[in-house]
Image 1 (cartoon, rainbow, N blue to C red):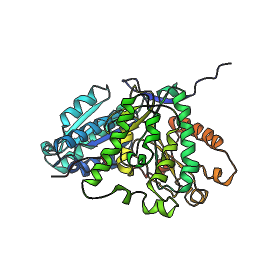
Image 2: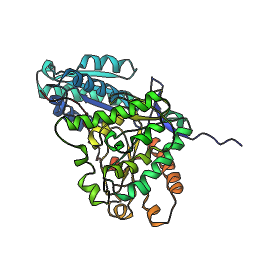
Image 3: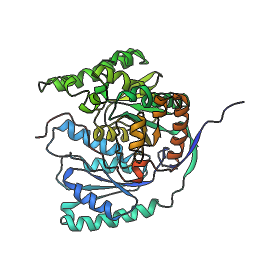
Image 4: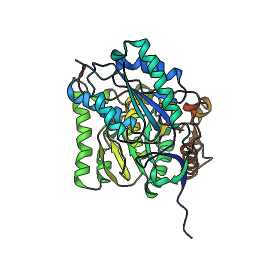
Length: 392
């Protein structure tokens, strides 16, 4: 007897994707517009704001990278409508942002602080525009859809020895299951491939993909060396070392476990979405939370599974982050922040498969509307965009 494909209840979007949330995304095109965007967000329920520190006085490749990343955030299935807040003289291309987001079929509006006469009138206009967008999408209803329409992003942070032994293993099992069901899984943290990149390259579907894996690791190390530093002096972090991780190679081996065992289909650049890309993918990202969470939300991921041992509580404005804790002491101490107790594996009271099954069930609930711990306490503002060049 055939097993029924798992389903969830999501918001259908005009581009064929399905959202786990139905937010109005308020996107400042430049850091100078961030305070206005945040003021609008505070006044209008149903909105989320993407505060960042980029958008001007950067080299052209980074300005294009910021523009592309903000567009991808607006394309997220969890965003039902978009309000772009511009200053008017920034380096990002806010006209292209508007045009490309409008092509998705979502309601999109744009305000310019300088054109409207300054901060106060821009906030007033923005509140009105955001209110209308919230009302426009508030009647949208969830519909049942296949797990094949899921994009899961994964990460580990505030890691200790239990991460590689428990919580990362749980995420790896979940990743394999989702890939086998026809969904998409994206992992990153290029810095944490160091010492284990050959293991990932062996899983590449082609020599070209394997070469690309080596290229992104080499580029990450080269950027560190260009300022006279060995990246291994910043990884593992002091917290990782205190948690029992002795080297970047040991940390990398534990981190790679969370990608599961399936073939790696390709490597995504930082601003890219994963729409239409089935199976397991790498996204070239750093390991720090604000930048990787932003990059993973830009893939179009409806949610993230986040492994931790020492306890990392933060989330993201529009992407629910499910915290899977491998350390039983941390879970008991930070139960208000952790969603899944994988520390039972360490204690011998549950197996990896049992916790993975429980996590999969919780994923379906979160996709259908159940809040994660960081959403419930509104710890969701970790955002920044990973740029490669200097501020000028």
